[in-house]
Length: 222
Image (tube, rainbow, N blue to C red; front, side, top):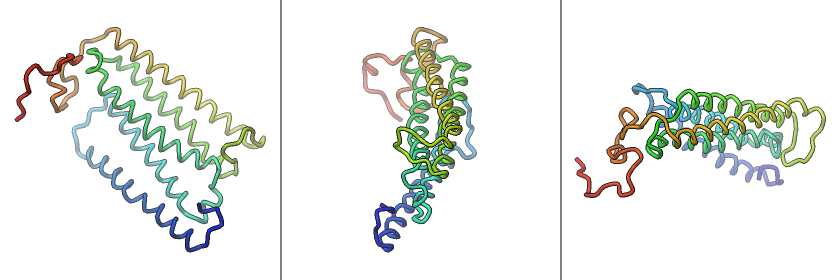
């Protein structure tokens, strides 16, 4: 909207409205960090993915705030800077949080504990490759490379090569996760009803995997 030729008053209106999005987003980030503050954290794979989600989502949020500034957006508009921002928010905000949840619930789903070393390989390969994939896109956008383009000028080739390497690496990293899930379904160390320390809730009182009829009689809740 900033680059459609609106009057300056309308541009200011949309700029301030867009910047206001940073307020609830900032509250969410501080809420997540405050939840962990001075907590007795253990850094199993679900927690690692959750922390990576917060860090990468915050990076995407900062670039979103930059896009909200009208004079700067005239340069950022329709470039790979927007692609970088969008995917830092979506991939880290969706995929990494889904991965955290998947690792958290995998013992309950399968009845087996997953391979911890394999999960660490998946985590570190995913975190490193996703940054190699998306972070250079900021510089492509600042240099003027447009988005939604079938071909690009030769001066963007080197950085795009780095981006492509990161993309293939991130995709291949997910094959580690696929193998881990298959391996976990087939067997492994048996998971207890409550595999995580301080896990609360009725779902952790039933065996892993949970039976088809979770409770034959209504559970007693204190």
